[in-house]
Image (tube, rainbow, N blue to C red; front, side, top):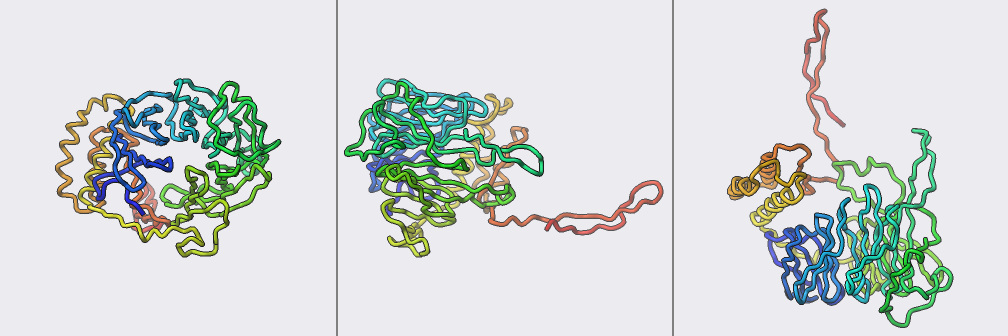
Length: 433
């Protein structure tokens, strides 16, 4: 295993992307660092576009989406920064490069409840709609051979009756879709031909007419990725009650990974109990997260799912080899700085209610040297945020989450009516469980 970036607690990397030849990471304060696969720093770029919320690397270009709903393309060699698109309705968080490195696909929030798939041509600067902005389309992914664009969409409107509320709901609302990228190619659902070489050309004019759904039933599809040899993988959830994932729970939603083969038109379940998945740049491997395990799967072979021991047979990565060096003082200083920065960049008023936010930082930053625990850091951050005098400004702390929440009891009382008013007759300690 190779360490990317600085060792210690003073730096936090928010996003990572690789094209199989290099690795790019985005820091919490908006910088981008590019490394070799051996962990050698090639270049550090400070594009000045704000806080980065999504990252995609391909050859000499980096696509970065920020906290303002903007999508930027950064040239690694020259440092030139070009805005590609901007959403007025939300963040652009799903971006992916075509294997040829010229076209960038992304999901753009296009309305209050809508999102559509678009493609940006980095050579011409033009933007093309793959889907119209009338549904909620998400999770774009290219076929590794460059012939298809896959995505998911919430447009399978087959309602089910809720017998409690006596209304119709769309419990299963999404399906996977495919767009043929070259005008002369036949739909793979009619006839699939193996690719001899990667496709280097894309016909974007009229691409919206070459979109069609996969021949599978509607469901709850979370993400889709393209794999080598005309295979597609997606993560699919069951319909579940919301209480399992309530506010104080650290539980991650889990589903099953299915593989669809465009050549044989067959679908098989690969593995269950998965909370997220990613594909390697060449589409040969799938990385899935199962509870507290990471499993790397060769798409040409089925892993030993019964084994829980790390190794090639099971595909489970030995995370015991990963050493994390933590310096609490540096880590807490970074966390404090990031909390201050997030409020500065995301507060709902540009003038921060007239508060001198730089002065607030200088006021509370010296107290970091007196912090002794993680809980005290939370107190300091909350006090700093309180200077804004605003509601709905919280510190949500993953460090304090547990698989099963333990609710704290409170005081109860017995009341008696004396003919004129209710009086407290006795205090009691009440449990919430």
